[in-house]
Length: 254
Ligand code: OOG
Image (cartoon, rainbow, N blue to C red; front, side, top):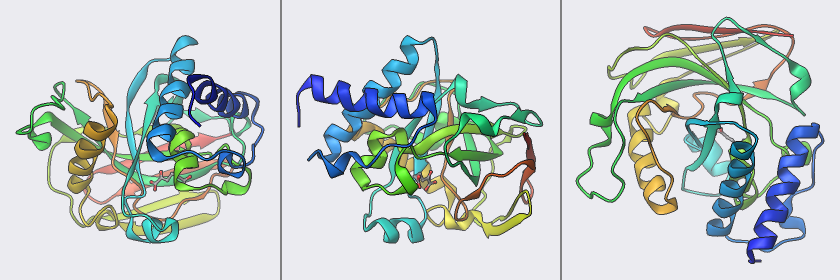
């Protein structure tokens, strides 16, 4: 790369893949780009959504599980942006037709209560959140067969495509809570400990990454802390996720 027009062209390619539900080959097959450029493509992609009237509602972390980091050969988490068009009401319907090859992950969500000052080195990220909830994230890579490099997936807004949040609860420590997700006939079980050893560490990793990539964190936004198990295919029927002590979140996939 890396001209502004290349960034825009790559963002357009990923945006078109999403809006037309058509997969696209890895950008890295034909473009040599680094992680800073990948975040620039992501920013351009989100700007396209905002230009269509979508509003950023939060951020999500990816690669917070050791297994996923090892699989990708990286040691850094990735951050993507959530928008209101991705939000599904707890108990609501989710149309499979809007995705290419969706998978679902059990998650824990945090709510940001005040704007986070990224420039202040003393910022205490834990004091910037006031609630947590069980959650699910639908990931739908725009890349063919979910085949991508680390830079590719960052450019593709970390496969973010839909999310659902359960009832907010006062903040508490959840280092090792049982997690159970059922989608169609598939059940997956795990623990919140899979999220960097304790989901609260995801907040610290988020602050670090948002500082490096100038991604704002605002009051009222949600943070998806990362998957507690491997993702499973999203299939028609009721999909539920239970996090012990936090409750259940559910969507009807149609
Ligand atoms: C990238 C997104 C992964 C997570 O929690 O690790 C992710 C992907 O695998 O498509 O959201």
